[in-house]
Length: 271
Image 1: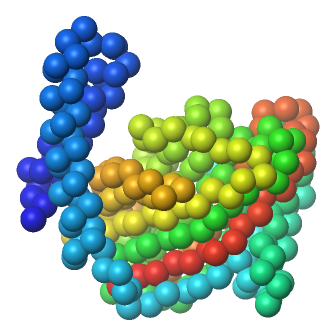
Image 2: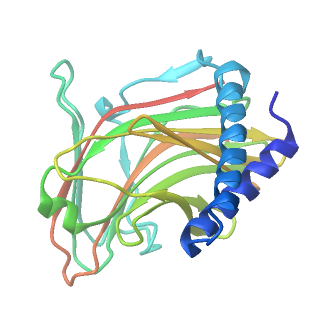
C-alpha cells in the first residue's frame, strides 16, 4: 500500500533526480541509485492507482462535452484577467453523429488575449474524486505558432469553497503547468511539452479532494502517466456547482494571429 511517507519520498526523490540530471552529477552511481528508488515508488503509485485510489468505474460520467451546445464564453481570464472578450472567440460544437471534433477559434485584438469557455455539470457537492479526459489538436504549424497555451479545467464549488483543478500546455516555457487557485498563478511541473501540429494530444488528469486539500495526483499524456501530487487549499465561496472548462491563449504579437484548436472526447467523471 502507498503510504504518506512514500508520497513524500517520491516528491523529494523526483526533485533530486531532476537536479541530478540538470547539473550532470559526476557520480553515475549516485544518480542511478536515486532513479532506482524513484522507480520503486512510482510502481507503488501505479499499483495504488490501479487498485483503489482511482476507481475505474466512476459513479457519474459526462461524455463528449464537446458536442454540447450549452458552453458559455465568459470572456478573458488567465493573462488578461478580464471578463470582456478582447477579440473574437468562437466555439463550434462537434456535430452529433459525425465523428468530427469541436472547433475553438481565437482572434485576439491585443497581445496575449485569451478566451475561456465553460459548461455546467450540475451541483455535485459530494464528489471527491475526479477524472478529466480530452484530446486536442492544433491543426497547422501556423495554429501552433499563434497559440501561447491550451488550458483545461474542472471547478467544483462545494463545502463552502471553490476547488480548482486546471492544467496548461504552455508553449512558451515548454512545460505542462498546473494552477494554484489560491495564489492565482501557474506552477511549472517537470513534464515537458511535446506537441506537433496536426497531431492529437491525448490527456487524462486525475484529482482527489481530501479534507482541506485538492490534490493534482497525476496526468497521463499520450499514454504516459506522470505523478504530480501537488495539493492546494480551497477558496471561500457560497455556491454549489461543477463545471468543465477550456481556454486558449494567443501569443504576444500585436495583434496576435488568429488560430484554431480542435477538441474531441472531452469527458469528465466523478465519484
